[in-house]
Length: 434
View 1 (cartoon, rainbow, N blue to C red):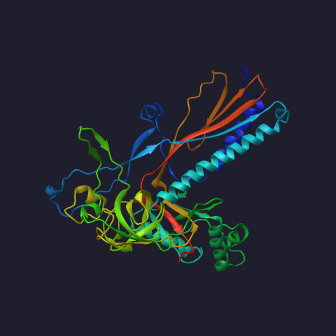
View 2: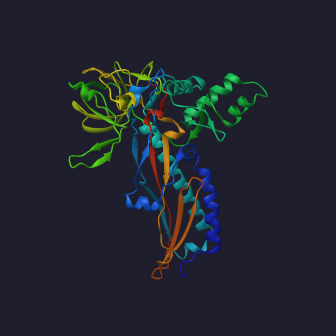
View 3: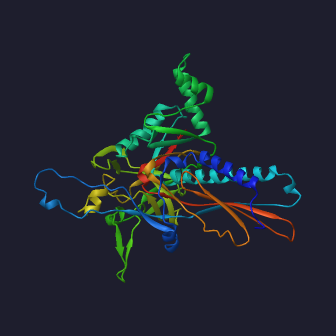
Protein backbone atom coordinates (compact mmCIF):
# COMPACT_ATOMS: atom_id res chain seq x y z
CA UNK A 1 0.00 0.00 0.00
CA UNK A 2 1.36 3.46 -0.87
CA UNK A 3 0.48 4.89 2.55
CA UNK A 4 1.51 1.90 4.64
CA UNK A 5 2.98 2.55 8.09
CA UNK A 6 6.67 1.90 8.50
CA UNK A 7 7.98 -0.51 11.12
CA UNK A 8 9.27 2.45 13.15
CA UNK A 9 5.84 4.09 13.12
CA UNK A 10 4.21 0.88 14.34
CA UNK A 11 6.68 0.53 17.20
CA UNK A 12 6.20 4.18 18.14
CA UNK A 13 2.40 3.72 18.15
CA UNK A 14 2.65 0.73 20.50
CA UNK A 15 4.82 2.74 22.89
CA UNK A 16 2.39 5.65 22.79
CA UNK A 17 -0.48 3.34 23.66
CA UNK A 18 1.41 2.07 26.71
CA UNK A 19 1.81 5.67 27.86
CA UNK A 20 -1.86 6.32 27.11
CA UNK A 21 -2.90 3.62 29.59
CA UNK A 22 -0.68 5.09 32.29
CA UNK A 23 -1.88 8.65 31.65
CA UNK A 24 -5.58 7.87 32.13
CA UNK A 25 -5.23 8.06 35.89
CA UNK A 26 -8.62 9.53 36.67
CA UNK A 27 -10.58 7.43 34.19
CA UNK A 28 -9.50 4.41 36.22
CA UNK A 29 -11.64 5.75 39.05
CA UNK A 30 -15.01 5.75 37.28
CA UNK A 31 -17.25 2.99 35.97
CA UNK A 32 -16.91 1.77 32.39
CA UNK A 33 -19.90 0.69 30.30
CA UNK A 34 -18.98 -0.94 27.02
CA UNK A 35 -21.66 -0.34 24.43
CA UNK A 36 -22.51 -2.22 21.25
CA UNK A 37 -21.36 0.16 18.52
CA UNK A 38 -23.90 -1.03 15.96
CA UNK A 39 -26.71 -0.27 18.37
CA UNK A 40 -25.21 3.11 19.22
CA UNK A 41 -24.96 4.03 15.54
CA UNK A 42 -28.67 3.28 15.14
CA UNK A 43 -29.69 5.33 18.20
CA UNK A 44 -27.68 8.49 17.44
CA UNK A 45 -25.08 7.42 20.04
CA UNK A 46 -27.57 7.68 22.94
CA UNK A 47 -28.38 4.98 25.46
CA UNK A 48 -30.34 5.23 28.71
CA UNK A 49 -28.45 3.95 31.76
CA UNK A 50 -30.09 3.09 35.10
CA UNK A 51 -29.62 5.19 38.22
CA UNK A 52 -29.18 3.60 41.63
CA UNK A 53 -32.32 1.77 42.75
CA UNK A 54 -33.67 2.87 46.16
CA UNK A 55 -36.56 0.93 47.69
CA UNK A 56 -38.32 1.27 51.08
CA UNK A 57 -38.82 -1.49 53.63
CA UNK A 58 -41.80 -2.07 55.92
CA UNK A 59 -42.27 -3.55 59.40
CA UNK A 60 -44.41 -6.62 60.13
CA UNK A 61 -45.35 -9.98 58.68
CA UNK A 62 -48.42 -8.81 56.76
CA UNK A 63 -47.22 -6.83 53.77
CA UNK A 64 -50.47 -6.98 51.79
CA UNK A 65 -50.76 -3.22 51.41
CA UNK A 66 -47.11 -2.71 50.47
CA UNK A 67 -46.85 -4.57 47.17
CA UNK A 68 -46.44 -1.51 44.97
CA UNK A 69 -44.74 -0.94 41.67
CA UNK A 70 -41.20 0.33 42.11
CA UNK A 71 -39.86 3.10 39.88
CA UNK A 72 -36.54 2.60 38.10
CA UNK A 73 -34.99 5.92 37.02
CA UNK A 74 -32.50 6.25 34.18
CA UNK A 75 -30.33 8.91 32.55
CA UNK A 76 -29.42 9.51 28.89
CA UNK A 77 -25.81 8.62 28.12
CA UNK A 78 -24.24 9.94 24.93
CA UNK A 79 -21.03 9.13 23.11
CA UNK A 80 -20.50 12.81 22.42
CA UNK A 81 -16.75 13.44 22.66
CA UNK A 82 -14.83 13.19 19.39
CA UNK A 83 -11.32 14.50 19.87
CA UNK A 84 -8.57 14.54 17.26
CA UNK A 85 -4.94 15.66 16.93
CA UNK A 86 -4.15 16.33 13.24
CA UNK A 87 -0.65 17.18 12.00
CA UNK A 88 1.20 17.25 8.71
CA UNK A 89 4.87 17.00 7.76
CA UNK A 90 6.59 17.71 4.49
CA UNK A 91 9.41 15.78 2.86
CA UNK A 92 12.05 18.01 4.44
CA UNK A 93 10.72 17.53 7.98
CA UNK A 94 10.44 13.79 7.48
CA UNK A 95 14.21 13.56 7.12
CA UNK A 96 14.33 13.72 10.92
CA UNK A 97 12.80 10.36 11.84
CA UNK A 98 12.50 11.40 15.50
CA UNK A 99 9.89 14.02 14.59
CA UNK A 100 7.19 11.40 14.06
CA UNK A 101 7.75 9.89 17.48
CA UNK A 102 7.82 13.27 19.20
CA UNK A 103 4.61 14.41 17.56
CA UNK A 104 2.94 11.10 18.34
CA UNK A 105 3.96 11.44 21.98
CA UNK A 106 2.55 14.98 22.06
CA UNK A 107 -0.72 13.68 20.57
CA UNK A 108 -0.87 10.95 23.22
CA UNK A 109 -0.34 13.44 26.04
CA UNK A 110 -3.00 15.81 24.70
CA UNK A 111 -5.68 13.16 24.12
CA UNK A 112 -5.13 11.46 27.47
CA UNK A 113 -5.22 14.87 29.16
CA UNK A 114 -8.45 15.75 27.34
CA UNK A 115 -10.16 12.56 28.54
CA UNK A 116 -9.02 13.15 32.12
CA UNK A 117 -10.10 16.80 32.00
CA UNK A 118 -13.50 15.85 30.65
CA UNK A 119 -14.10 13.37 33.47
CA UNK A 120 -12.99 15.87 36.12
CA UNK A 121 -15.08 18.66 34.58
CA UNK A 122 -18.13 16.44 34.78
CA UNK A 123 -17.47 15.65 38.44
CA UNK A 124 -16.88 19.28 39.43
CA UNK A 125 -19.70 20.82 37.37
CA UNK A 126 -22.54 18.32 37.77
CA UNK A 127 -21.89 16.84 41.21
CA UNK A 128 -24.29 18.57 43.60
CA UNK A 129 -22.49 18.01 46.92
CA UNK A 130 -20.52 21.02 48.18
CA UNK A 131 -17.94 21.29 50.93
CA UNK A 132 -17.31 24.94 51.84
CA UNK A 133 -14.11 25.59 53.80
CA UNK A 134 -13.31 29.05 55.13
CA UNK A 135 -9.62 28.13 55.54
CA UNK A 136 -6.85 26.86 53.30
CA UNK A 137 -6.43 23.10 52.79
CA UNK A 138 -5.24 21.41 55.97
CA UNK A 139 -5.88 17.69 55.50
CA UNK A 140 -8.06 15.42 57.59
CA UNK A 141 -10.53 18.09 58.69
CA UNK A 142 -11.23 18.98 55.04
CA UNK A 143 -11.73 15.43 53.80
CA UNK A 144 -13.81 14.66 56.89
CA UNK A 145 -16.44 17.10 55.64
CA UNK A 146 -16.75 15.28 52.32
CA UNK A 147 -16.82 11.97 54.17
CA UNK A 148 -19.62 13.22 56.41
CA UNK A 149 -21.65 14.50 53.44
CA UNK A 150 -21.43 11.15 51.70
CA UNK A 151 -22.05 9.05 54.81
CA UNK A 152 -25.06 11.13 55.87
CA UNK A 153 -26.46 10.90 52.35
CA UNK A 154 -26.10 7.14 52.18
CA UNK A 155 -23.30 7.08 49.60
CA UNK A 156 -21.41 3.78 50.11
CA UNK A 157 -17.68 3.63 50.76
CA UNK A 158 -15.37 0.65 50.81
CA UNK A 159 -12.57 -0.71 48.64
CA UNK A 160 -12.74 -2.56 45.32
CA UNK A 161 -9.73 -4.24 43.70
CA UNK A 162 -7.45 -2.50 46.17
CA UNK A 163 -8.74 0.98 45.32
CA UNK A 164 -11.08 3.16 47.36
CA UNK A 165 -14.54 3.70 45.88
CA UNK A 166 -14.41 7.40 46.83
CA UNK A 167 -11.97 9.79 45.15
CA UNK A 168 -10.87 13.39 45.73
CA UNK A 169 -8.88 15.33 43.12
CA UNK A 170 -7.19 18.49 44.39
CA UNK A 171 -5.57 21.42 42.64
CA UNK A 172 -1.79 21.46 43.03
CA UNK A 173 -1.81 24.24 45.63
CA UNK A 174 -4.57 22.63 47.71
CA UNK A 175 -2.95 19.19 47.52
CA UNK A 176 0.44 20.59 48.49
CA UNK A 177 -1.22 22.44 51.35
CA UNK A 178 -2.56 19.15 52.68
CA UNK A 179 0.84 17.50 52.30
CA UNK A 180 2.53 20.38 54.12
CA UNK A 181 0.11 20.12 57.01
CA UNK A 182 0.59 16.37 57.14
CA UNK A 183 4.37 16.48 57.29
CA UNK A 184 4.32 19.24 59.90
CA UNK A 185 1.87 17.50 62.19
CA UNK A 186 3.44 14.04 61.94
CA UNK A 187 7.10 15.08 61.50
CA UNK A 188 9.42 12.52 63.06
CA UNK A 189 12.40 10.58 61.77
CA UNK A 190 11.47 7.20 60.32
CA UNK A 191 7.74 7.97 60.06
CA UNK A 192 6.90 6.75 56.54
CA UNK A 193 3.77 8.87 56.16
CA UNK A 194 5.59 11.98 57.32
CA UNK A 195 8.68 11.26 55.21
CA UNK A 196 6.66 10.81 52.01
CA UNK A 197 4.68 13.98 52.67
CA UNK A 198 7.93 15.93 53.15
CA UNK A 199 10.01 14.34 50.37
CA UNK A 200 7.35 13.71 47.71
CA UNK A 201 4.47 15.98 48.68
CA UNK A 202 2.38 12.80 48.95
CA UNK A 203 -1.00 12.73 50.70
CA UNK A 204 -2.37 9.30 49.71
CA UNK A 205 -5.53 7.77 51.19
CA UNK A 206 -7.39 9.95 53.70
CA UNK A 207 -10.36 8.48 55.54
CA UNK A 208 -12.27 6.65 52.81
CA UNK A 209 -10.90 8.70 49.89
CA UNK A 210 -8.13 8.15 47.37
CA UNK A 211 -6.52 11.56 46.77
CA UNK A 212 -4.96 12.82 43.54
CA UNK A 213 -3.03 15.93 42.53
CA UNK A 214 -4.22 17.97 39.52
CA UNK A 215 -1.92 19.96 37.31
CA UNK A 216 -5.07 21.60 35.97
CA UNK A 217 -8.22 22.43 37.92
CA UNK A 218 -11.33 24.42 37.14
CA UNK A 219 -11.85 27.66 39.01
CA UNK A 220 -15.23 28.65 40.32
CA UNK A 221 -15.84 32.39 40.45
CA UNK A 222 -17.61 34.00 43.39
CA UNK A 223 -21.35 34.48 43.79
CA UNK A 224 -20.77 37.11 46.47
CA UNK A 225 -23.61 39.53 47.06
CA UNK A 226 -26.13 37.59 44.99
CA UNK A 227 -29.67 37.72 46.42
CA UNK A 228 -32.13 35.14 45.11
CA UNK A 229 -35.47 33.93 46.46
CA UNK A 230 -37.98 31.40 45.19
CA UNK A 231 -40.83 33.09 43.36
CA UNK A 232 -43.34 30.32 42.78
CA UNK A 233 -46.84 30.50 44.29
CA UNK A 234 -47.77 26.90 43.52
CA UNK A 235 -46.30 24.39 45.98
CA UNK A 236 -46.51 21.73 43.27
CA UNK A 237 -43.95 23.71 41.27
CA UNK A 238 -41.59 23.90 44.25
CA UNK A 239 -41.22 20.14 44.52
CA UNK A 240 -40.39 17.40 42.05
CA UNK A 241 -42.17 14.12 41.40
CA UNK A 242 -39.80 11.58 39.82
CA UNK A 243 -41.10 9.32 37.09
CA UNK A 244 -39.50 6.74 34.87
CA UNK A 245 -41.41 7.64 31.69
CA UNK A 246 -43.74 10.26 30.24
CA UNK A 247 -46.53 9.78 27.74
CA UNK A 248 -47.05 12.26 24.91
CA UNK A 249 -50.47 13.27 23.62
CA UNK A 250 -49.93 10.88 20.74
CA UNK A 251 -49.51 8.00 23.20
CA UNK A 252 -45.76 7.74 22.67
CA UNK A 253 -43.88 6.71 25.84
CA UNK A 254 -40.44 8.24 26.50
CA UNK A 255 -37.86 7.99 29.26
CA UNK A 256 -37.47 10.93 31.66
CA UNK A 257 -34.21 12.41 32.92
CA UNK A 258 -34.80 13.02 36.65
CA UNK A 259 -31.51 14.71 37.53
CA UNK A 260 -32.73 18.30 37.09
CA UNK A 261 -35.55 20.63 38.13
CA UNK A 262 -36.58 24.14 37.09
CA UNK A 263 -38.07 26.82 39.31
CA UNK A 264 -38.96 30.51 39.01
CA UNK A 265 -36.83 32.81 41.14
CA UNK A 266 -36.64 36.52 41.99
CA UNK A 267 -33.20 38.15 41.97
CA UNK A 268 -32.87 41.07 44.38
CA UNK A 269 -29.15 41.69 43.82
CA UNK A 270 -26.32 40.43 41.67
CA UNK A 271 -26.56 37.71 39.02
CA UNK A 272 -26.40 33.98 39.55
CA UNK A 273 -24.67 31.76 37.00
CA UNK A 274 -24.16 28.16 35.94
CA UNK A 275 -22.16 26.10 38.48
CA UNK A 276 -23.01 28.35 41.41
CA UNK A 277 -23.70 26.29 44.54
CA UNK A 278 -26.39 27.05 47.08
CA UNK A 279 -28.68 25.88 49.86
CA UNK A 280 -32.38 26.72 50.33
CA UNK A 281 -33.84 27.95 53.61
CA UNK A 282 -35.79 25.19 55.37
CA UNK A 283 -34.57 22.37 53.12
CA UNK A 284 -32.31 19.81 54.81
CA UNK A 285 -30.61 16.73 53.40
CA UNK A 286 -31.89 13.24 54.23
CA UNK A 287 -30.22 9.82 54.19
CA UNK A 288 -30.95 8.09 50.89
CA UNK A 289 -32.03 4.83 52.55
CA UNK A 290 -33.48 5.73 55.98
CA UNK A 291 -34.88 9.12 54.87
CA UNK A 292 -33.86 10.58 58.23
CA UNK A 293 -33.08 14.31 58.53
CA UNK A 294 -29.30 14.78 58.67
CA UNK A 295 -29.64 18.21 60.24
CA UNK A 296 -27.55 19.65 57.38
CA UNK A 297 -28.80 21.91 54.55
CA UNK A 298 -29.23 20.20 51.19
CA UNK A 299 -26.73 21.51 48.63
CA UNK A 300 -27.66 22.24 45.01
CA UNK A 301 -25.84 23.37 41.86
CA UNK A 302 -27.10 25.65 39.06
CA UNK A 303 -26.97 23.64 35.82
CA UNK A 304 -28.69 26.00 33.37
CA UNK A 305 -30.24 29.45 33.19
CA UNK A 306 -33.49 28.81 31.34
CA UNK A 307 -34.38 32.49 31.23
CA UNK A 308 -33.36 35.68 33.01
CA UNK A 309 -30.55 35.47 35.54
CA UNK A 310 -30.82 39.05 36.71
CA UNK A 311 -34.01 40.51 38.21
CA UNK A 312 -36.14 37.40 37.68
CA UNK A 313 -35.93 34.22 35.74
CA UNK A 314 -36.19 30.46 35.59
CA UNK A 315 -33.32 28.46 37.04
CA UNK A 316 -32.48 24.82 36.36
CA UNK A 317 -30.62 23.08 39.16
CA UNK A 318 -29.61 19.67 40.43
CA UNK A 319 -30.69 17.58 42.22
CA UNK A 320 -34.44 18.14 42.15
CA UNK A 321 -36.32 18.77 45.40
CA UNK A 322 -38.01 15.46 46.24
CA UNK A 323 -39.62 16.08 49.61
CA UNK A 324 -42.43 13.50 49.58
CA UNK A 325 -44.38 15.74 51.98
CA UNK A 326 -47.75 16.04 50.22
CA UNK A 327 -49.62 12.82 49.37
CA UNK A 328 -46.44 11.35 47.90
CA UNK A 329 -46.30 8.89 45.04
CA UNK A 330 -44.39 5.64 45.44
CA UNK A 331 -41.54 7.17 43.43
CA UNK A 332 -41.34 10.16 45.80
CA UNK A 333 -41.14 7.82 48.77
CA UNK A 334 -38.35 5.85 47.08
CA UNK A 335 -36.22 8.79 46.02
CA UNK A 336 -36.96 11.37 48.74
CA UNK A 337 -33.83 13.51 49.24
CA UNK A 338 -35.08 16.56 51.17
CA UNK A 339 -36.91 17.20 54.43
CA UNK A 340 -39.47 19.64 53.05
CA UNK A 341 -40.73 21.59 50.08
CA UNK A 342 -39.35 25.14 50.35
CA UNK A 343 -41.71 28.02 51.06
CA UNK A 344 -42.49 30.57 48.43
CA UNK A 345 -40.03 33.39 49.06
CA UNK A 346 -37.43 31.05 50.62
CA UNK A 347 -33.93 32.48 50.26
CA UNK A 348 -31.08 30.80 48.42
CA UNK A 349 -27.70 31.01 50.17
CA UNK A 350 -24.78 30.77 47.79
CA UNK A 351 -21.75 28.82 49.01
CA UNK A 352 -19.08 29.88 46.51
CA UNK A 353 -18.44 33.28 48.06
CA UNK A 354 -14.83 33.64 46.88
CA UNK A 355 -13.13 32.59 43.66
CA UNK A 356 -11.30 29.30 44.21
CA UNK A 357 -10.19 26.06 42.59
CA UNK A 358 -13.00 23.53 42.23
CA UNK A 359 -11.72 20.28 43.76
CA UNK A 360 -14.02 17.45 42.64
CA UNK A 361 -14.81 14.40 44.74
CA UNK A 362 -16.99 11.49 43.70
CA UNK A 363 -18.00 7.89 44.23
CA UNK A 364 -16.74 5.62 41.50
CA UNK A 365 -20.24 4.54 40.46
CA UNK A 366 -21.46 8.14 40.07
CA UNK A 367 -19.75 8.57 36.68
CA UNK A 368 -19.64 6.24 33.70
CA UNK A 369 -17.29 6.18 30.72
CA UNK A 370 -18.72 4.93 27.43
CA UNK A 371 -15.92 4.02 25.01
CA UNK A 372 -16.71 4.50 21.32
CA UNK A 373 -14.98 3.81 18.03
CA UNK A 374 -14.70 4.97 14.45
CA UNK A 375 -15.13 2.43 11.65
CA UNK A 376 -12.30 3.87 9.54
CA UNK A 377 -11.74 1.87 6.30
CA UNK A 378 -8.13 0.82 5.73
CA UNK A 379 -8.52 0.37 1.99
CA UNK A 380 -9.66 3.87 1.05
CA UNK A 381 -6.34 5.53 0.27
CA UNK A 382 -5.02 5.83 3.81
CA UNK A 383 -3.35 3.60 6.35
CA UNK A 384 -5.03 2.89 9.69
CA UNK A 385 -3.70 1.57 13.00
CA UNK A 386 -5.95 1.09 16.01
CA UNK A 387 -5.50 -0.18 19.52
CA UNK A 388 -7.65 -0.25 22.65
CA UNK A 389 -6.63 1.03 26.08
CA UNK A 390 -7.27 -0.88 29.28
CA UNK A 391 -10.32 1.35 29.80
CA UNK A 392 -11.80 0.35 26.43
CA UNK A 393 -11.04 3.60 24.58
CA UNK A 394 -9.95 2.93 21.02
CA UNK A 395 -7.10 5.08 19.73
CA UNK A 396 -7.03 5.34 15.94
CA UNK A 397 -4.00 6.61 14.04
CA UNK A 398 -4.36 7.32 10.32
CA UNK A 399 -1.85 8.41 7.70
CA UNK A 400 -2.21 9.75 4.18
CA UNK A 401 0.37 11.10 1.71
CA UNK A 402 -0.08 13.48 -1.21
CA UNK A 403 1.99 13.25 -4.39
CA UNK A 404 1.12 16.85 -5.25
CA UNK A 405 3.21 18.51 -2.55
CA UNK A 406 4.91 15.59 -0.74
CA UNK A 407 2.96 16.31 2.42
CA UNK A 408 2.13 13.49 4.82
CA UNK A 409 -0.89 13.93 7.07
CA UNK A 410 -1.30 12.11 10.38
CA UNK A 411 -4.16 12.14 12.84
CA UNK A 412 -4.91 10.50 16.19
CA UNK A 413 -8.57 10.12 17.23
CA UNK A 414 -10.56 9.02 20.27
CA UNK A 415 -14.33 8.72 20.65
CA UNK A 416 -16.05 8.37 24.03
CA UNK A 417 -18.90 9.49 26.24
CA UNK A 418 -19.24 10.45 29.90
CA UNK A 419 -22.35 10.59 32.03
CA UNK A 420 -23.09 11.65 35.60
CA UNK A 421 -25.40 8.86 36.76
CA UNK A 422 -26.10 10.36 40.17
CA UNK A 423 -25.29 14.03 40.99
CA UNK A 424 -25.83 13.32 44.71
CA UNK A 425 -22.80 11.01 44.76
CA UNK A 426 -20.31 13.65 43.56
CA UNK A 427 -19.42 17.22 44.35
CA UNK A 428 -16.87 19.97 44.83
CA UNK A 429 -14.65 21.10 47.71
CA UNK A 430 -13.92 24.85 47.91
CA UNK A 431 -11.25 26.42 50.11
CA UNK A 432 -10.72 29.97 51.42
CA UNK A 433 -14.39 30.91 51.24
CA UNK A 434 -15.76 33.87 53.16
